[in-house]
Image (tube, rainbow, N blue to C red; front, side, top):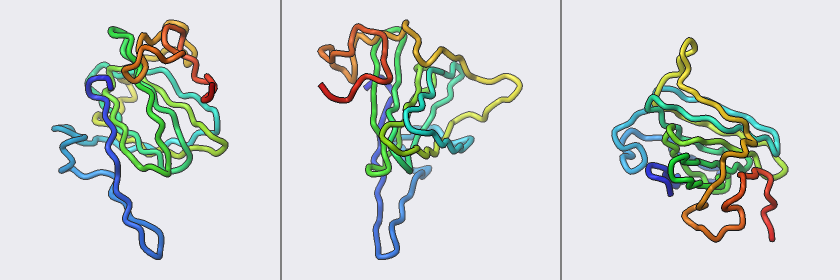
Length: 167
């Protein structure tokens, strides 16, 4: 994983009514370190919708939790040309931590919409947003490694959010 990109599996406690799950605790230092949450957001996306690429250069960190559907979450480092791809879904509840200085984005995968709660470590500034953007299909995002592997067939080519998940 890129430095600072982490996943943290959440614990579901099921009973006859359904389940209970803590989704954030201030004492979860292994995922939060010394950060804390400044804002919580909710995002609903239709199948095959890509929301990419953007980054934050003033120290923001994003924490994604996909609570319905499934989503591909990617982070890309311009300097090292490394790309991390994480699939998160309602079936494996986890926090996906993305330091904001990496280009990052998401794609809803599967046949159903996704519902994502995401937390950020800095408040959104409406007058001076901490956000830099690139097109979702930017041909300059060419990973030299994917999840630490150099032999993936997607390496060395412009990133394709719609690359088929089969051979």
